[in-house]
Length: 89
Image: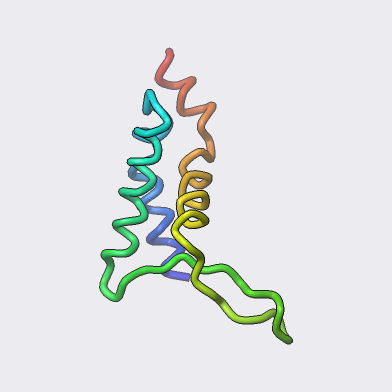
């Protein structure tokens, strides 16, 4: 989906900043920057997950900000050891 591609691009752009941040609050700030970029798209981007309670796989429903922040932070952490290893060389 094009929204996922855009999200992944935003994550790729900020991944180094996130993984080299010195504090948890700095990491949260970077993750929120990514979330804000998604929300500021035209039309606004949303963070969705499949609601499996319905027949045929269910509907897509918007997740709350806490879950969206967790999803964004997880995406930013992917590949973190190799990023930190490159900068320590």
